[in-house]
Length: 371
Image (cartoon, rainbow, N blue to C red; front, side):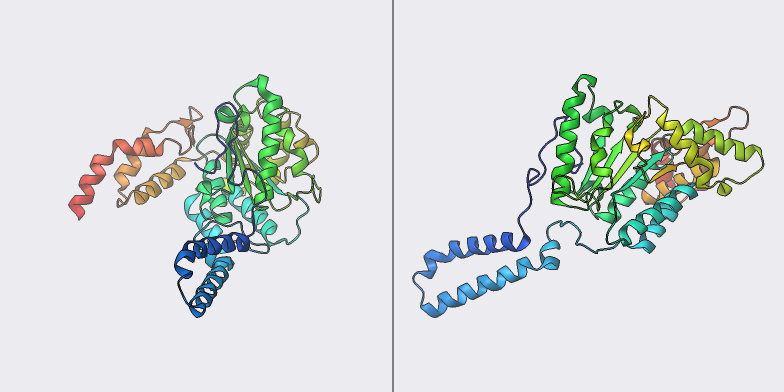
């Protein structure tokens, strides 16, 4: 992942530009045009003045084309222009067709992101904290969102993924990590105000580390001359998953449909739970204390029918026709809880790809037979 912050001991590599402000597209284009003209100079010396004038005119025209944003950005990834809005319809379609069993997450994130995108003057960066057990779709949703802000998604130089166990492994390096994290975010938001920062494995983050970015998430117009109000911060965590699962099971036990669960039923409990959980990464965090996290987004445990949806989607993604026998076989290989009722997958859809690999030969034979 080229856009991810990398470095096993928290040594963050310099971004393109090294955190310095990028030169304007017009300036860069002029330099390229001048360089091209310089290569032509030996030949131009032997030409008539009219030819020289023509060559200079061509270079000027070339500069104009290269400095035109749409032309330049069709070849080089550019930070979104001010006022550029997300496509709400396309985002909704992708969430509806690819994220299964998460009506709450889809609704909350879609409204939050579109409201933020359509606001020309947000008062603070958008900050989302996604919670739930593994395999419920937290990473998947963050990737979809990143792709709608920057089409290259996780490969974009404006999308930055942090893994707690990879980038912040040592507790005795906490002070160093805080400084590096602040410098990394400051440099990249300077380069692109619409930067996206994703912090995965928040439940493995050292307590207090994430508080280093508190000034950037607050209601400040600028911090040291840099505005962070157009950036997006996303936290991913398994913390709070037990609380969410219990609430979902209570709804099921009382005879209610999972689609009846509303954000107000879970968010207050979730925010308090992660604040008091020493293994949440947000334990007694000022981000929670100062209400700087806009939404705590619960991801519900997935039922048998949702696992089947994941299997079908993966089969189609591999180019196979959906075989319901294979779908059922993969779903039957998953483990469910509680032990008696067996309602929810204990790994969500996380192992669907690996389990489907076992049936690859059968799917290939069926595909050839039908072909």
